Length: 332
Ligand SMILES: Nc1ncnc2c1ncn2[C@@H]1O[C@H](COP(=O)(O)OP(=O)(O)OP(=O)(O)O)[C@@H](O)[C@H]1O
Ligand SMILES: [Mg+2]
Image (cartoon, rainbow, N blue to C red; front, side):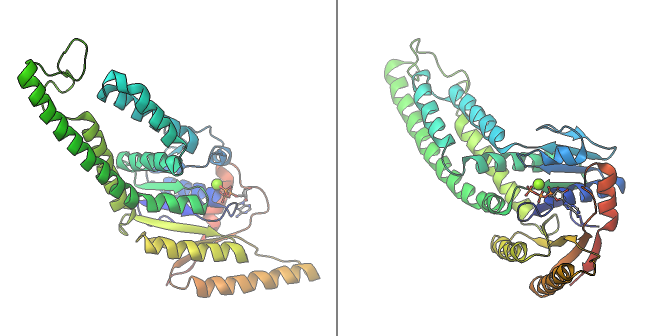
């Protein structure tokens, strides 16, 4: 059983088999009677292809116990930005809306915006996934994912700064309104009709501040879940080849630096049989050497083995076969 915690993230180098292993593991958990959610962030929609079900950004049922969704980072960023715009349009005086929207459009193309939006979505999925006994994130390739997971800490610091600034602005605004109110006898945000702010009803509630605080709290909750070894584990898929081994070793070191619990590695596409030809003997020798490196490099984590199938892994039957053949190779 690969999914030993409620929440699992599958990482690894491009093309090693993350989607295959994540889908097979999620299906195995669901077949075993657990309510399971599979979340993919792959813009290439390969989870839909593998499960042979058209997935989208809303949860869809795949089998009795398996639900799945496919998040598109670019679309998530768009949705996130327009949500932020809507909130601001409600919160700032009308004459400032155009300028604020311009600033947001600039922020949209800044580095990290897509990751931030995607993380926001991750955090929401985590918040809303309480009904599932297993949640599997089939993440995008390694570099991006690591940045994403390092983000909550940065985001929390960044947002605390924003919140503090907003508090100051709010306090100043209130002072100003009190002064203006005392002299003009009305509370005006520059509205032509001099009306009071209906959204706050004159009560001291700042919608921007509330939204920022909610967002920060969600990040803090997500961070807490991600770093809790009782709830979460990060699994790496690799093939018995030099580069995936190196990349996985590096990624594991980075995750540990962020205090994100690493649950083990899945050695995928392990060749069970080799022919007697000279070329095959070379390949067999290379695979054995890599298996030795894997044994020493990842000695302190759990290791699973998945053999290479002789046909493409597409559809639920093929995934169930992968699930059946997945074995624990070593427990430290
Ligand atoms: N154990 C296996 N046996 C045979 N084919 C496999 C196995 N695992 C994966 N494959 C095949 O390898 C290809 C890549 O697998 P997959 O899409 O799961 O990788 P990925 O790590 O998710 O890739 P990406 O980084 O692009 O998301 C697919 O065609 C898949 O069918
Ligand atoms: Mg994939």
